[in-house]
Image (cartoon, helix red, strand yellow):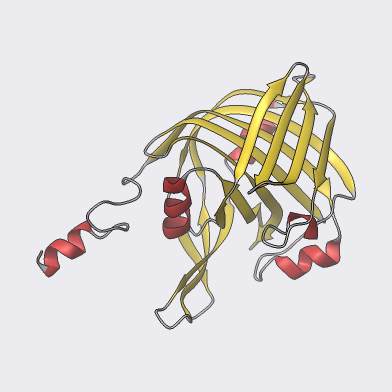
Length: 245
């Protein structure tokens, strides 16, 4: 294989059989359970990298079912997103993410810098309750519940929140282990077709784990619960801050 062919084909690894296809990445009937809670502001400040800023000590814990996603297939994801501000614009910073499918783990980390690790999340309706769980190996580390479709949410507000900016810390090490890339990446969700959004009573329990430290951001007060179903496209990102410059 000539050098020119390597450069032409080198968008993902392995070179001759990439773990994921080229985008765009469209998601159909993506279902969210989002539980927003108040946490310890000191611990939150310790985990959010500058130049991102925190207005309130809030965390959004998300359970997401993705039954139909271009190139990635059928999978479930869970994790913590922290509301932040960057240069006066409000958005969300992805602190940690856990999912059960290799292509979006590889693609998410390599392309955008999503902080993804392998685990076993679930999201399903159990009689009158929407239930989200997250297991790391055999250990339960999160359980979230919400009353099923108790009240219709503000459509415009939910759609605006989905379309807002999102931020990631992308780290790619050099061969000697030092950071070769260390950047703040911004991305957006595009072509959002909001099919439904509801609110209801919600609860969230987090458990300590050495390799999945969700409980470092303790649940002090539940602020809200949201259930969302939408079609959307995951847009590619742009670098907004280079830590190595």
